Image 1 (cartoon, one colour):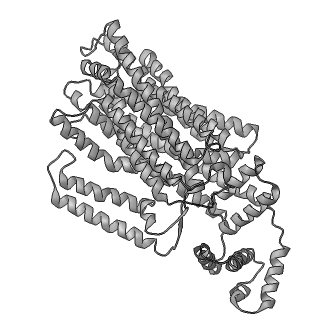
Image 2: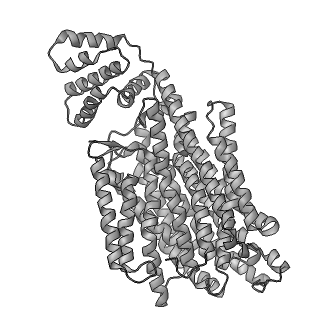
Image 3: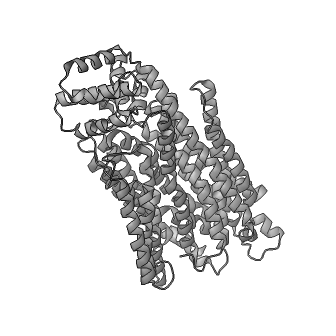
Length: 627
């Protein structure tokens, strides 16, 4: 797959992979962090989230100008890494939910956005410069597909890393994750529930989350397993046992007494009941302690981004010989008498910029829809999706099984010769078989647990997982079509991507048919759907993204006037910024619309965008062919 490409591609791809790992670790939990720490409702959180994403993708316009006119690409990229590091460091510092806390959070988010503005577009411009040489120019689209895959390798590990850190920190405080608690706190702050209802729901969450002695842990698991089919009397009995288990933990009930709860000794049960009634459960105090532990776990996850940036800068500087020869903007090329410098007429510049702007308009609506994965699709995962899965289902969620599963498919690709080399059926079969055995062993490892709890952010790993899985197939498809002279143009691929994205959200419309609207539920919905609905949506949206995003970046790199390469890459990201801002605006209607109609809005936007780009396709293809 990398055969025939310049060595600088791998260096820049790896540097970007490290930075993206930190960014997506942060993004996977950002909305959850804002609500957990400050108790903000979905409207306010959506506005903050959308504004931040808009800045992340709008500020590359500034970064492109700085690189084109002042510093050049390499130095601007290094400046961006430094600024981003400061932002992540601020987010990793625990603090109170007061004015200073808000200032710290907003300052951190601005620094991350500004640093990304200096970094992201200019790194893409450097990749484009590698393919200005005629030896490599025909491989530009494939190069950006490979570059994009490495971005998503970093993104693939991010949600699981955030998930592991969250669970580890909570476990140290004798808690486990329960989405109902932060949701209940938000509703109390927003006066959606009264204090009595808050205490009742928080007590139920307490019973589910508190860690208990080993002897009582089995009782809790059995109670949870039976809860869906138990009569009310059995439910009361199970809840009684869970409360009693909490007394064991607090050493207010002996294990000997606990073991006798199933006996007919009414005196013992009456004594235990009395001890339970003597305890004064302070819902606000428990929720406050739990939320403090939860936000601290998010702080630790943000700190991971600092380490990933250090790795990125080491790769970028350590192998700078591979990209340094192309680290030239037009001004620097002319100063060095570079023969490859291209001067366009004013008419050609206007024509190219006009074509780019029309493509930018289309992608606004794609990103407005796609980036709901970090906001409303995360709300859907939290409030409407089953959060306990079987060991078999866990194959799709655990890195211990997903990583070898990738190699199962890569062994098949190797056997089929999809990596640009000869078919290697023996080696490919060995890789696939060994990897399949590892998947099975990871499944066996989890058999001791009847149910495994998942967090909302874990679903965000499916998009990068599918990109890693599908990129070799997409590259092979386009390579084959290119050899036959039938490869669609980049603008045409973008149009197909919009249609495929619409199909992805139709899946969520079907999943939402019998679900109550967000305004009709108190915390978590009583009706929950299978995780397979969200996984299927991510699969279709990933195919759409592979048709649109790397092809769009390649289109910009090819068509952008030489004197505005950094600026036009910034323009692509600025279009993404507007889309991301609309993510937050649309998210403000999450509590207002029925679920199915919320997803229907996204379907309509995608289809209208596809219609627009196909209406101007000939004009876009003419500009592409002349570039």
